Image 1 (cartoon, rainbow over the protein chains, first blue to last red):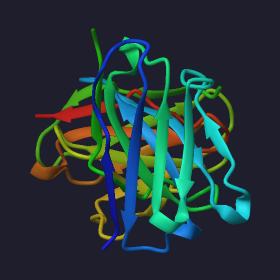
Image 2: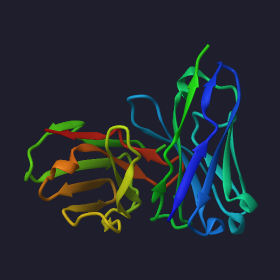
Image 3: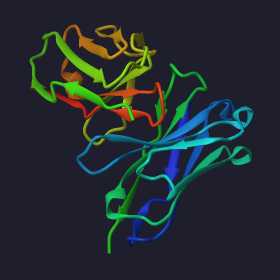
Image 4: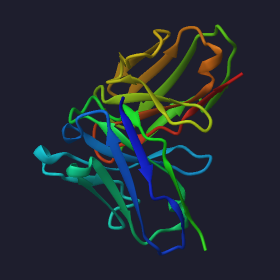
Length: 122
Length: 106
């Protein structure tokens, strides 16, 4: 069974940092790209970024709203992906989901984790 | 960035109705369009990928079509469990962008 489990969310002050984790199981992790998507309370979905796999040199993409503040990394030995968030703002308050994708342009985001809530507030 | 719009933003429907939701892209995206369903408090679920391919396990009353800039999600006969919010996602170019969602309720 495909599973993605996010952790690391919580309350953080504006300007602070947080690292979210996404632990994967039930599939060949090294074959897959991983995306992060967030959803602010009562709002729609926003794509945050992506990390490719080793054959694609672990390169990343990110949304303009988080570029230069958020970075994505992965540890294939742990079947895990991390979202490193710095200089957090109130508008970063959201549930953060990790999701599995393939390396094909037409087949993305097929399974989602349950999400972890990040609240940025003083 | 590619902007995605959806219409309608909300709609009321009844069980058995045929429902059509439209998603438009600000520029051509070929068939790189995916549809998701999200129920309150739940994780989004992929329904359709590559514009018209039905995700395994999704009922056949759901279908998708379109290419370029205009896409549709159709529910042929609305069931009680289909009341939810539907989102489209373009993945033709970075950054990927979601539509604002269409809420389908009674």
